[in-house]
Amino acid sequence: MNGPGMKESGQKVIKSKDVKYFTAPGGQAPSSDGFDSKRVQEAFAKKIRITEEESYQRGLSDGIRKGRELEKKETLKTLQAMSAIVKEMAALKKNTLANMEEEIVQLSLAIAQKVIHLEATTNREVIRGVLKEAIKGISDRENMKIRVHPQDFHFMIGIKSDFLQGFDGIRNVTFEEDESIQRGGAIIETVCGEVDARLEQQYNEIKAAMTAAK
Image 1 (cartoon, rainbow, N blue to C red):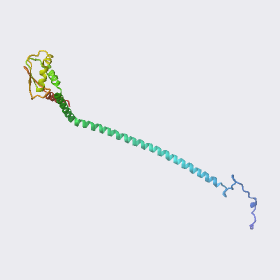
Image 2: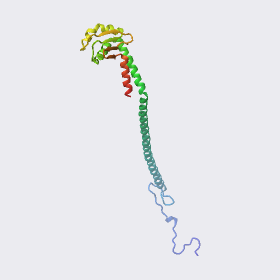
Image 3: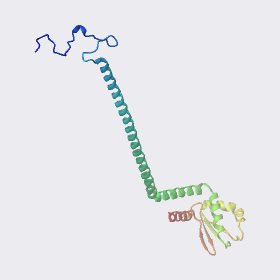
Image 4: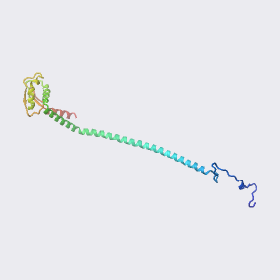
């Protein structure tokens, strides 16, 4: 056994004076373990930044994609809701019109009646038109008696000659006042029967036609 300070056979003792150090780039000495710790730290930090950036980009991309998918779903829901509302409104409109049809018909008839009455009381030419249409439908025009409202009577007496010249086969026609007949209407008595040309009678015929057409 060799004593202290002695070297074993075949072993070489390296003295401190024989150890040489090298200088790392930048003038800094290497770490004691032989690695450049600063470069390792920088590389590690860079790797972390890259990983964080990639994670952020993936998260952003996923968020945008999910957001678009959600937007599409919400848009589809909105369109479906709007479509349902339109269908409901159409059905409601149809049902409302069906329910209001009778009221609309009655209102229209009431308005027509008021208009006819107003026209007959303010326009004396109404009786001329009514009698003209009524006499056209009479084949036997001899010995007719025409009953009209007193105000219409005076008007027709004034235009009697000119009015009767517009018809063929008319003979012995007389006009008679009848206060029970509203202005604008008339009742014509012929050898074949009676022709009701009162405005209320014509109104009732229009009303019946409108009611039957529903």
